Length: 146
Image (cartoon, rainbow, N blue to C red):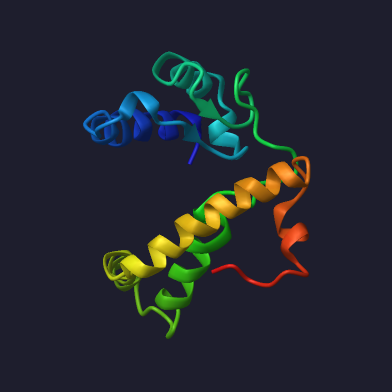
């Protein structure tokens, strides 16, 4: 993945879907500091389509809280959960791997999603409480919230 491919993904796959969402104008787009996200063309596109409503490396309006890459549900929960389902046994081929990933997402229980949302709100509040420091470290002595 590079900046150009990421931009094409945003333009061709992401934007046509989210533009249809009710309340699209209030959505805040978040991304981490991965090299494709840092691409100038990507940041310019985000400024054009999410002016004042995107958070990430290079955002002039909503910078990412320092040392808190652990805020998004994808980072603190989803990828680990999906991997644990997908790799219960070793995939036999790329097609098998892709099918397992799709199945894992399709079978994600609503209860788990709801708990992740509650946990996300707690993490944001905790980030404020610890002045933007690493939320995982702040939670280390408090147990798992998911």
